[in-house]
Length: 229
View 1 (cartoon, rainbow, N blue to C red):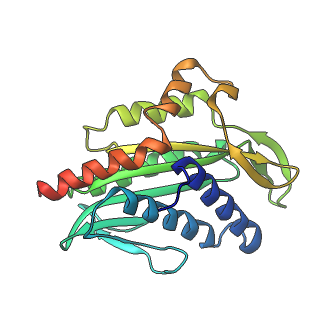
View 2: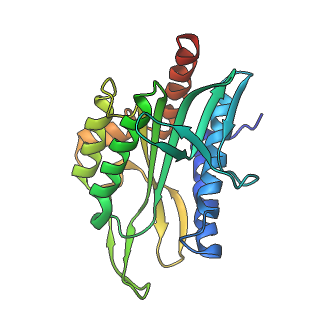
């Protein structure tokens, strides 16, 4: 078993994912396959024998598909055991033009959550962004630098607090990584202390929305779901 921490493994996955963007382009699924593989590895560390994780990964190009209450859905990572579809994790990694799309990202998550949770499937969401987030024009030139904002963090914190309701993920986390725009590389995990946000938002990022704790909480929910079909 590797002696690296989950935070270190998260950073490595984000760096490799970003390199895939540089190599293959932003529309390539190579970026997401890296992160999906990392998520499957982390779940394997938390859950016991018999659990199966499907979806795209560095060694698999096929997406997993789940029948939702209202429509079938291709999902990032599907968790199953004994033939039962128990959980889904959705992963979003935003590397440019965040502000203009922030509400769309949020609304998509709420809709996808309700569709799957109505099937009694445990739903987790990982939302990852760079810090800063470049805004690029149609020519691909960076015209300004954005950051995830106070009200964005609070919006997700309120959603996570609503996890008992069908429209909210059972678990969610926000991962923020430092981007060196001059070197075009991810250099580290963003320390919330350095961000221009309130103490309440910093606390939310470290606790309720923590990447480190997300997998432990998600695994416990999936285990309970398996025991209480």
